[in-house]
Amino acid sequence: MLIDTHAHIYLHRFEDDFDAMLARAREAGVEAIVMPAIDVASIRRALALSAAYPSLFVMAALHPSETKDATDADFEAVAASCDEPRVVAVGESGLDYYWDRSFDAVQHDFLRRHARLAMERDLPLILHSRDKPGREEVFEDLVRILQEERRAHPQGHRLRGIFHCFGGPPWLAEAAASLNFLVGLGGTLTFKNSGVDAVVREVPMEQIVLETDAPYLAPVPHRGRRNEPAYVRLVAEKLAEVKGLSVEEVARITTANARRLFGLPDGAPRPSAA
Ligand SMILES: [Zn+2]
Image (cartoon, rainbow, N blue to C red):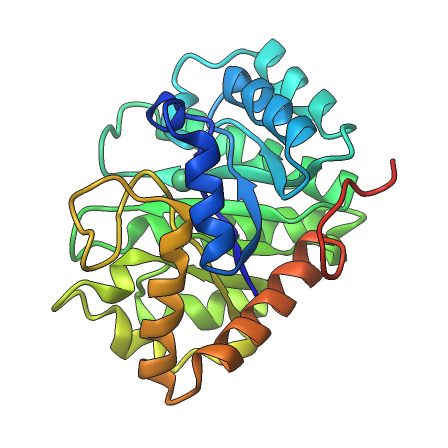
Protein backbone atom coordinates (compact mmCIF):
# COMPACT_ATOMS: atom_id res chain seq x y z
CA MET A 1 0.00 0.00 0.00
CA LEU A 2 1.11 3.57 -0.73
CA ILE A 3 0.45 6.96 0.84
CA ASP A 4 0.45 10.18 -1.18
CA THR A 5 1.73 12.58 1.47
CA HIS A 6 1.16 15.74 -0.59
CA ALA A 7 -1.72 16.29 -3.05
CA HIS A 8 -3.76 19.45 -3.62
CA ILE A 9 -6.84 17.53 -4.74
CA TYR A 10 -9.24 20.11 -3.27
CA LEU A 11 -8.41 22.34 -6.28
CA HIS A 12 -11.09 22.91 -8.91
CA ARG A 13 -9.05 20.95 -11.45
CA PHE A 14 -10.24 17.74 -9.74
CA GLU A 15 -13.91 18.65 -9.42
CA ASP A 16 -15.10 17.03 -12.64
CA ASP A 17 -13.70 13.55 -12.00
CA PHE A 18 -13.09 13.49 -8.25
CA ASP A 19 -14.54 10.03 -7.52
CA ALA A 20 -12.96 8.47 -10.60
CA MET A 21 -9.62 10.03 -9.61
CA LEU A 22 -9.88 8.52 -6.12
CA ALA A 23 -10.85 5.15 -7.61
CA ARG A 24 -7.73 5.22 -9.79
CA ALA A 25 -5.66 5.99 -6.70
CA ARG A 26 -7.17 3.04 -4.82
CA GLU A 27 -6.55 0.84 -7.85
CA ALA A 28 -2.88 1.91 -7.77
CA GLY A 29 -2.67 0.90 -4.09
CA VAL A 30 -2.95 4.35 -2.52
CA GLU A 31 -4.60 3.93 0.88
CA ALA A 32 -4.37 7.49 2.19
CA ILE A 33 -3.85 10.99 0.78
CA VAL A 34 -2.75 14.04 2.79
CA MET A 35 -3.89 17.40 1.42
CA PRO A 36 -1.63 20.42 2.06
CA ALA A 37 -3.45 23.73 2.49
CA ILE A 38 -2.23 26.96 0.95
CA ASP A 39 -4.66 29.40 2.58
CA VAL A 40 -7.70 29.50 4.89
CA ALA A 41 -10.18 28.74 2.09
CA SER A 42 -8.26 25.62 1.07
CA ILE A 43 -8.22 24.36 4.67
CA ARG A 44 -12.03 24.56 4.65
CA ARG A 45 -12.31 22.74 1.31
CA ALA A 46 -9.89 20.02 2.42
CA LEU A 47 -11.74 19.56 5.74
CA ALA A 48 -15.05 19.17 3.91
CA LEU A 49 -13.53 16.49 1.67
CA SER A 50 -11.94 14.66 4.60
CA ALA A 51 -15.34 14.52 6.29
CA ALA A 52 -16.79 12.78 3.22
CA TYR A 53 -13.88 10.45 2.38
CA PRO A 54 -12.16 8.43 5.14
CA SER A 55 -8.89 8.07 3.17
CA LEU A 56 -8.29 11.84 3.03
CA PHE A 57 -6.40 13.83 5.66
CA VAL A 58 -5.65 17.54 6.01
CA MET A 59 -2.71 19.87 6.68
CA ALA A 60 -3.32 23.44 7.79
CA ALA A 61 -1.05 26.41 7.02
CA LEU A 62 -0.50 29.41 4.80
CA HIS A 63 1.78 28.64 1.84
CA PRO A 64 4.82 30.97 1.90
CA SER A 65 3.77 32.55 -1.42
CA GLU A 66 0.36 33.30 0.13
CA THR A 67 1.74 35.15 3.15
CA LYS A 68 2.33 38.51 1.43
CA ASP A 69 -1.07 39.88 2.44
CA ALA A 70 -1.90 37.35 5.15
CA THR A 71 -3.33 38.70 8.41
CA ASP A 72 -3.19 37.69 12.06
CA ALA A 73 -6.80 36.56 11.67
CA ASP A 74 -5.70 34.18 8.89
CA PHE A 75 -3.09 32.66 11.15
CA GLU A 76 -5.63 32.38 13.99
CA ALA A 77 -7.90 30.45 11.60
CA VAL A 78 -5.01 28.10 10.78
CA ALA A 79 -4.30 27.56 14.48
CA ALA A 80 -7.99 26.94 15.27
CA SER A 81 -8.27 24.36 12.49
CA CYS A 82 -5.53 22.32 14.18
CA ASP A 83 -8.19 21.27 16.69
CA GLU A 84 -9.96 19.33 13.93
CA PRO A 85 -9.22 15.60 14.32
CA ARG A 86 -8.62 15.19 10.55
CA VAL A 87 -5.82 17.79 10.58
CA VAL A 88 -2.65 15.69 10.86
CA ALA A 89 0.03 18.32 10.14
CA VAL A 90 0.88 21.99 9.84
CA GLY A 91 1.52 22.57 6.13
CA GLU A 92 2.47 23.65 3.73
CA SER A 93 4.68 26.31 5.24
CA GLY A 94 8.26 27.11 4.30
CA LEU A 95 10.04 29.68 2.14
CA ASP A 96 9.84 30.54 -1.54
CA TYR A 97 12.66 32.65 -3.01
CA TYR A 98 11.81 31.78 -6.60
CA TRP A 99 8.95 34.12 -7.40
CA ASP A 100 9.17 37.23 -5.28
CA ARG A 101 11.86 38.47 -2.87
CA SER A 102 9.97 41.58 -1.76
CA PHE A 103 8.49 40.03 1.40
CA ASP A 104 11.16 37.66 2.75
CA ALA A 105 10.68 39.07 6.25
CA VAL A 106 6.97 38.24 6.15
CA GLN A 107 7.73 34.71 4.95
CA HIS A 108 10.24 34.24 7.78
CA ASP A 109 7.74 35.48 10.34
CA PHE A 110 5.02 33.06 9.20
CA LEU A 111 7.48 30.17 9.01
CA ARG A 112 8.42 30.82 12.65
CA ARG A 113 4.76 31.01 13.66
CA HIS A 114 3.97 27.75 11.86
CA ALA A 115 6.97 26.01 13.46
CA ARG A 116 5.81 27.11 16.93
CA LEU A 117 2.26 26.02 16.17
CA ALA A 118 3.50 22.57 15.12
CA MET A 119 5.51 22.19 18.33
CA GLU A 120 2.64 23.43 20.50
CA ARG A 121 0.14 21.04 18.89
CA ASP A 122 2.66 18.20 18.56
CA LEU A 123 2.02 18.00 14.79
CA PRO A 124 4.54 17.48 11.98
CA LEU A 125 5.53 20.55 9.94
CA ILE A 126 5.48 20.21 6.15
CA LEU A 127 7.85 22.54 4.33
CA HIS A 128 8.00 23.99 0.85
CA SER A 129 11.34 25.45 -0.26
CA ARG A 130 12.26 26.82 -3.62
CA ASP A 131 15.12 28.97 -4.90
CA LYS A 132 16.46 29.90 -8.32
CA PRO A 133 18.42 27.06 -9.96
CA GLY A 134 21.92 26.81 -8.53
CA ARG A 135 21.13 28.95 -5.49
CA GLU A 136 20.89 27.49 -1.96
CA GLU A 137 20.01 30.54 0.12
CA VAL A 138 16.46 29.40 0.79
CA PHE A 139 17.63 26.06 2.21
CA GLU A 140 20.23 27.73 4.42
CA ASP A 141 17.64 30.15 5.81
CA LEU A 142 15.09 27.40 6.34
CA VAL A 143 17.50 25.19 8.30
CA ARG A 144 18.79 28.13 10.37
CA ILE A 145 15.28 29.29 11.30
CA LEU A 146 14.17 25.78 12.27
CA GLN A 147 17.29 25.34 14.43
CA GLU A 148 16.60 28.65 16.16
CA GLU A 149 12.94 27.87 16.78
CA ARG A 150 13.69 24.40 18.09
CA ARG A 151 16.29 25.76 20.50
CA ALA A 152 13.98 28.51 21.76
CA HIS A 153 10.85 26.39 22.29
CA PRO A 154 10.13 24.46 25.51
CA GLN A 155 8.70 21.64 23.34
CA GLY A 156 11.56 21.81 20.82
CA HIS A 157 12.01 18.03 20.89
CA ARG A 158 8.62 17.74 19.15
CA LEU A 159 9.84 19.44 15.97
CA ARG A 160 9.60 17.02 13.05
CA GLY A 161 8.17 16.92 9.54
CA ILE A 162 8.92 16.74 5.83
CA PHE A 163 11.00 18.74 3.38
CA HIS A 164 8.50 18.31 0.58
CA CYS A 165 9.47 18.11 -3.12
CA PHE A 166 13.02 17.26 -2.14
CA GLY A 167 15.68 17.44 -4.85
CA GLY A 168 18.84 18.38 -3.00
CA PRO A 169 21.25 19.95 -2.43
CA PRO A 170 22.86 16.80 -0.96
CA TRP A 171 23.71 18.44 2.40
CA LEU A 172 20.04 19.28 2.92
CA ALA A 173 18.99 15.66 3.53
CA GLU A 174 21.50 15.43 6.39
CA ALA A 175 20.49 18.80 7.79
CA ALA A 176 16.88 17.66 7.62
CA ALA A 177 17.69 14.42 9.42
CA SER A 178 19.47 16.31 12.21
CA LEU A 179 16.23 18.28 12.66
CA ASN A 180 14.17 15.07 12.66
CA PHE A 181 12.72 15.79 9.20
CA LEU A 182 11.99 13.34 6.40
CA VAL A 183 12.21 14.17 2.70
CA GLY A 184 9.23 13.91 0.33
CA LEU A 185 9.99 12.53 -3.13
CA GLY A 186 7.74 13.19 -6.10
CA GLY A 187 7.65 13.40 -9.86
CA THR A 188 10.95 15.25 -10.22
CA LEU A 189 12.69 11.97 -9.30
CA THR A 190 11.50 10.60 -12.66
CA PHE A 191 12.62 13.62 -14.72
CA LYS A 192 15.56 13.01 -17.02
CA ASN A 193 18.71 14.91 -15.99
CA SER A 194 17.06 16.29 -12.83
CA GLY A 195 19.90 14.80 -10.78
CA VAL A 196 17.44 13.92 -8.03
CA ASP A 197 18.18 10.20 -8.35
CA ALA A 198 21.88 10.74 -7.54
CA VAL A 199 20.98 12.76 -4.42
CA VAL A 200 18.37 10.23 -3.31
CA ARG A 201 20.80 7.32 -3.57
CA GLU A 202 22.53 8.69 -0.43
CA VAL A 203 19.33 9.21 1.59
CA PRO A 204 18.36 6.31 3.90
CA MET A 205 14.97 4.71 3.15
CA GLU A 206 13.84 5.43 6.73
CA GLN A 207 13.96 9.15 5.86
CA ILE A 208 11.82 8.98 2.70
CA VAL A 209 8.10 9.44 2.06
CA LEU A 210 6.36 9.60 -1.32
CA GLU A 211 4.17 12.35 -2.75
CA THR A 212 2.73 13.62 -6.01
CA ASP A 213 2.20 17.36 -5.35
CA ALA A 214 -0.83 16.89 -7.63
CA PRO A 215 -1.88 18.65 -9.82
CA TYR A 216 1.72 19.79 -10.36
CA LEU A 217 4.94 17.97 -11.39
CA ALA A 218 3.40 14.84 -12.89
CA PRO A 219 5.96 12.02 -13.16
CA VAL A 220 7.12 10.58 -16.48
CA PRO A 221 5.28 9.55 -18.71
CA HIS A 222 2.60 12.08 -17.68
CA ARG A 223 5.04 14.98 -17.37
CA GLY A 224 3.43 18.32 -18.27
CA ARG A 225 -0.11 17.07 -17.75
CA ARG A 226 -2.32 17.09 -14.62
CA ASN A 227 -0.83 15.01 -11.84
CA GLU A 228 -3.00 12.85 -9.57
CA PRO A 229 -2.45 10.57 -6.54
CA ALA A 230 -2.51 7.31 -8.55
CA TYR A 231 0.80 8.39 -10.10
CA VAL A 232 2.58 8.09 -6.74
CA ARG A 233 3.11 4.48 -7.83
CA LEU A 234 5.36 5.73 -10.65
CA VAL A 235 7.48 7.54 -8.06
CA ALA A 236 7.66 4.33 -5.99
CA GLU A 237 8.74 2.37 -9.06
CA LYS A 238 11.49 4.86 -9.87
CA LEU A 239 12.70 4.87 -6.27
CA ALA A 240 12.78 1.06 -6.29
CA GLU A 241 15.00 1.22 -9.39
CA VAL A 242 17.32 3.84 -7.83
CA LYS A 243 17.63 1.92 -4.55
CA GLY A 244 17.76 -1.59 -6.02
CA LEU A 245 14.71 -2.65 -4.00
CA SER A 246 11.36 -4.15 -4.94
CA VAL A 247 8.39 -1.82 -5.32
CA GLU A 248 6.71 -3.70 -2.47
CA GLU A 249 9.64 -2.98 -0.17
CA VAL A 250 9.64 0.71 -1.14
CA ALA A 251 5.88 0.87 -0.51
CA ARG A 252 6.17 -0.92 2.84
CA ILE A 253 8.92 1.35 4.20
CA THR A 254 7.66 4.70 2.90
CA THR A 255 4.09 3.96 4.03
CA ALA A 256 5.30 3.02 7.51
CA ASN A 257 7.35 6.25 7.62
CA ALA A 258 4.32 8.35 6.61
CA ARG A 259 1.96 6.58 9.04
CA ARG A 260 4.37 7.11 11.91
CA LEU A 261 4.95 10.79 11.13
CA PHE A 262 1.29 11.74 10.62
CA GLY A 263 -0.08 9.32 13.21
CA LEU A 264 -2.30 7.70 10.59
CA PRO A 265 -4.19 4.56 11.55
CA ASP A 266 -2.83 1.21 10.38
CA GLY A 267 -4.55 -0.54 7.49
CA ALA A 268 -7.92 0.77 6.35
CA PRO A 269 -7.86 4.46 7.19
CA ARG A 270 -10.63 5.88 9.32
CA PRO A 271 -11.11 9.16 11.15
CA SER A 272 -8.89 9.20 14.22
CA ALA A 273 -10.62 9.75 17.55
CA ALA A 274 -10.72 13.37 18.69
ZN1 LIG B 1 2.34 21.64 -2.49
